[in-house]
Length: 155
Image 1 (cartoon, one colour):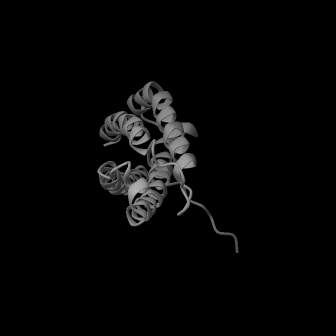
Image 2 (tube, helix red, strand yellow):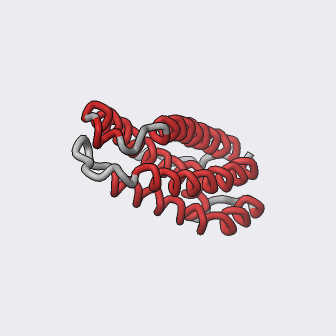
Image 3 (cartoon, helix red, strand yellow):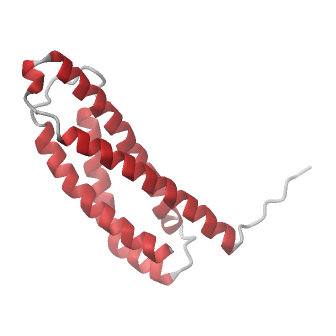
C-alpha cells in the first residue's frame, strides 16, 4: 500500500521550526563554551609542554566538530525553508534576504577555520590559533546577532 504524504499544518511547521531552532541554539551555546575555553589556552604552551599541546589539540578537535554541527544546524533551523522557498512570512523572508549573505560569509569563515585546525592530534602550527580564534570570534558574534534577529522574527 502506498503511504499518503500529508502536508504539514502551520502549527506542525512552527513546532518543527522551534525544535530546530532550539537544537541550533543548544549547539551554539556548547560551541561558544568550548570557544571560550580555547581562547584561554596559552598560545605558546605547545612549545614548552607537550601535555598542554595535546590537551589543546583535543579541545580544538572538539571545538571544530561542534562548530561544524552548529553551522549545519543553522542551515536546517533557519535557512533551508527560506532557500527552498517554503517560508511564507514576508517579514521573515525580507530579513533573511537582508542578512543571509553576511551569514553565509560567516559560515565560510568557520569552515576555513575548521579546515585549518581539524587535524586530529597532529596539528603542528598552533602559533596562529589565538589570532584565528579572535577573527573567528568576531565573525561568530555577528552571525549570532543576525541569527537572533531571524529567530525573533520566526517567533
